[in-house]
Length: 430
Image (cartoon, rainbow, N blue to C red; front, side, top):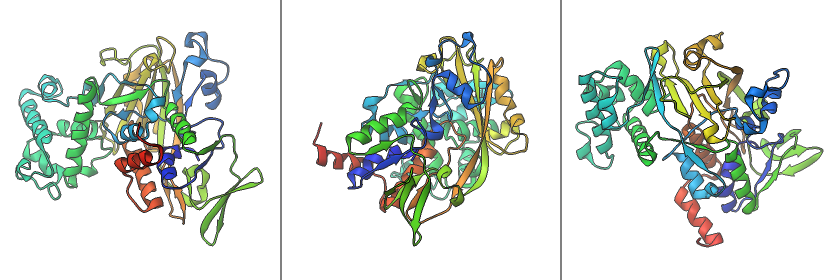
């Protein structure tokens, strides 16, 4: 069902046949890109038609759930190893920014940027530079690079103390570099955080402007690419297929009923919307799609960017994210920009919670709100339920979920190199 075109290649190469059924008429489910613009109006029940100032409706591809790809991250590796990249074109986003004291600043992630950044004072710049050098040289397999730190025992809070970093620097390091959503990581072993910062730096080094990539024509291109590849490997796709019943016998799934017919199966993968009686709500995410006629202020007129508002900067428990794209990625008409704000809902007035982000975007031409439930799965024999998309603007947490489902389905870890070897055994080298 929607979302799990991503696991098809590997499951097929493991000797399994894959049938993908989707009740929607388009690929991607809740993470689809909506086109033309008229369809977005219908989805949000906006009366009338888009004004002529919005340009041609078919020039728009609006993501319902905004995400960027970390250039050296897990999803890019999946795309490369499965060769879905043959169906996709990407463009680097122009900047990554962080919010401090009501203003936004470019995220410093190299020694040179740290020294030039206006985020920090002179002495803190030097301390942060030493920290970045330490992270760059850190090697879990070489204890000589530890400098008295035990990566499996020393907390990240203690590492920050070691370099005498202040709270503002800790905020943007943990949330804009390591991409944590909360501060829970501070009291956990530091190796995970150090590796996250290294991933950010390595991704930035690949393209220079920012560590993030985004597909031309929107994120809807990703599931379409996987659909094409799945078809090559023998997978079957059926859109517009209503799911009437998931058939379970003796506690195990045996099939799915659609339009009076039963497709039999031994394992089922689906998102929570298909099995509402087997998941529980654990929270909500608010997403706001904003259409602008200008780039975001203080981003050097970037055509695309990410802004992270760390929780401590706005007295919250979780971060606020802004993802902005434009006609540079073929998702909007010329001169128009799409900025999507997202965060985890913490109060009964979610629209007030995202005000700091909306103020950065003013003036806003149009706003479309959507509050989405966040679900947690119940275990059920041979039914594998994905988690709902979180508020982050990257795919790392989503890839973790996919690999977890794969391991539970097959009993083994998702191995990129092994998948490539199996493919070569079956289809031969390129």
